[in-house]
Image 1 (spheres, one colour):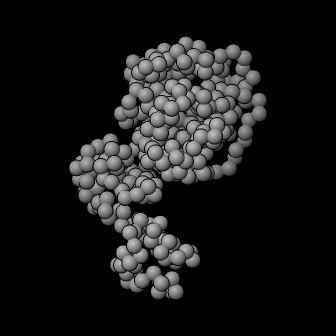
Image 2 (tube, helix red, strand yellow; image 1 turned 30 degrees about the vertical axis):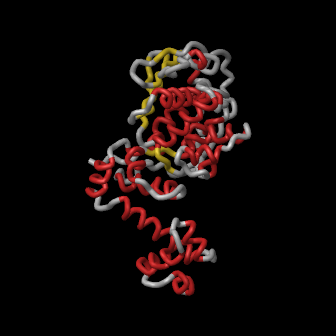
Image 3 (tube, one colour; image 1 turned 180 degrees about the vertical axis):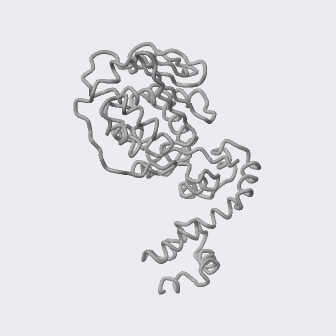
Length: 329
């Protein structure tokens, strides 16, 4: 059974990036520090490693405060989640919006579970990660999800609290008291590393006063693709190579496994990290050489080659001719 690298869409970090931009913070540098592409604000559908995204949120909470997962969210933030957010914006009521989000969650993330469970007079929303996160990361991620759920209930004219009950993992130092002002009262500690929110039918079934009727069709296919480790590696490898050479130990960490296990699983799928890097470099090189007028020396530097002659040798291996001749056609 294949075990892919956990993935999430870049839209998941968009509210954090927008908040940083509004407050004059270098969001590009912080993304790079987390091993993520600096262009994510403009690529919301791009898959990224879920553990790298969680690391980015945890680091942000350490510098900006343990309540940052709530502070970056406004009642309009659901619209920043790209296609995933659009399924909520097209709903008639908050109940419909949450149900739509549950159905679309496999497009958004590969290793999260989001359940909307109806009960007598209430609905319980449960969220959990299917990978291990430390308490700091889990705290900021779950308060962020809770704040987003609260935002889904905006715009109905409801007076009073939107959330009836909230349970999530406490911050290891700050606890939970700092979240009450954002989440409608006292937040309770979770005992199972899940976020649990109880919502009353009265809050869920009020129609939106100004619903956004998004009737357009758009792709909501699963982020897992074919479900292989190779597919997930190919999703994140371009962003990794933007920072420098791909290190198999770092990729193993993003996969939540050991170096040897990662190598063994790739071999079982008929490939290796070096083969995947070579495949990507070939694709990028051919696209740049044949599809642009960029100088060959510039292309070789951008693709990580130490000198132009090394790049030329690689092109001869891939295309049986040097870049200059390939460009002339």
